[in-house]
Length: 331
Ligand SMILES: Nc1nc2c(c(=O)[nH]1)N[C@H]1C(S)=C(S)[C@@H](COP(=O)(O)O)O[C@H]1N2
Ligand SMILES: [Mo]
Image (cartoon, rainbow, N blue to C red; front, top):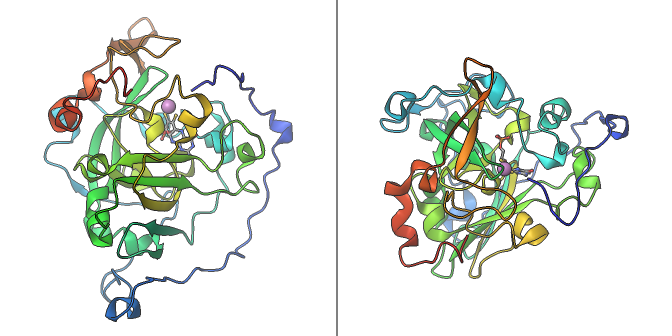
């Protein structure tokens, strides 16, 4: 995406100093922050026979194929791993589509903890493999669409966010979930510049977070998530523009009020909180009626364009959540 008021300039590669990464981070202890029995044991301790999966980039990872969200039912071949992992938006590693693949190679994703806080009965700092259990991982092929009017079909591996949230027991005050990406300018050269308000922040209304489509993804194409795609854990919200799908999450906070998001803070006129894929609501600077399929060219070598679908094709699953809302106002 592009910010209108502040033209973005690609970072010259001469300015990027890949730092060697040291294993000096303290392994943060799980703190459940809740009295009684719960505080004495981790929530989802892996059983002895069950080898915990590790977010090691490139390692094979499998998930239960979803009966509906697969390539056959969708009738479209997923973009190749090569395409999915070399055409990226991850401004922490640069503004060009090739920058994340080029600069995220040494990004350290183990150990990885996620802080859970706010209106929730089981706050704490969780190791990723306690939050995401291997046996819950599903293989789901989703359409993915960026607000820049390009799209891909991607086979993600992940756990429904609802499953994770239910175990954390949000209180009745939780109306939204707010997420943050890790802030680590030593590892993320893009964070040394004010291109966006860092750390990257996003949010979902509680019903959107609990919708069965919403995934916490930890892999793609049968392997652990490549760093440039948001390792080790990122959101996938397939009916919304790609920027809602926040990468490399370290914080989940349950809140009462609609939280700020990086793109709305940067330019609220162009990027709203809801960000639902909607061919009838143009971005102020371009139409959203059609989209370019990345990695697919026609016989003349030109990119294939296709009509944009309402809610990216997931209308049946999500339209009810927005009944009665003016989607031009709440864009
Ligand atoms: N932390 C963070 N998350 C992010 C972004 C980013 O710059 N930083 N870019 C968003 C945008 S604009 C898109 S389109 C998707 C791209 O995901 P992909 O690179 O896996 O296709 O990530 C989203 N999540
Ligand atoms: Mo995007």
